Image 1: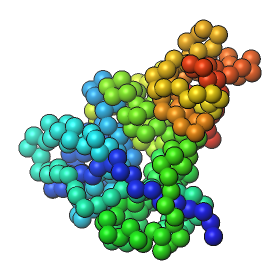
Image 2 (image 1 turned 90 degrees about the vertical axis):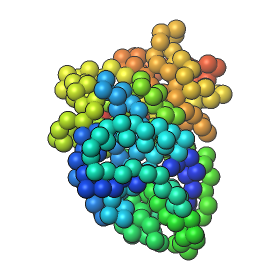
Image 3 (image 1 turned 45 degrees about the horizontal axis):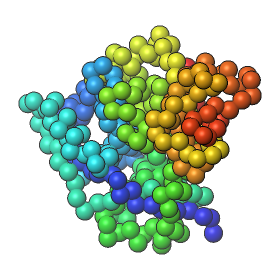
Length: 298
């Protein structure tokens, strides 16, 4: 039997967004196109400051005639508060959802076991809830939003309980950030952190908060740093630890686990290290940047 795993993502929280104006309301705020969301399609998106800096990232799927938003649990109140500031006279309700859990399903055959292909964002009904291919990257597997009492459907489908370390290792090796763990709030820029290639930005949808800065970076080729996966030899550096090459600043570390990490790095220094065949260093560890297959050079 293929080794496939499920993991309850206890750090996640859920919001429902309902009301007659829910689509137009979200369309003017988020980085992706809300009209893509349907019974068979979920999206990944972000809410930015007016200066184009990261505030929140989340997944949006169709749920109960409205939308369900899968976001960071510890920051869910802040996300709701910020959305409410824009509500004004829109016919929209924004409320937390209880009784449901967010689950990651990954490993060999995980997508096919759930009746999904490898099309990022593809969604289907499962066990009284829904499952969708991770909209960022099919290699991350699926995300499910299920009633707590229906979790037994996953072992019945051949999944075994996984460890957070396994999922983090997969995510880090693929170079995918995990919300504010890797994206400093009110500082991070989408295009430095892979949101374009990871399907978090729609370039045809029109205006949203922070759109002007994001578009300028793309069309004027202003991206000089990128978040990249790194192989780590030695003690994993703390988030924020400087990454250097012979004393020259290259960037800084983000999260790390099990010999893998993410680092926001200056592209010119990465290229220099590649030319010279030398690793970078962070604290007492050496770090070797890698370019994942989905990565497109800026």
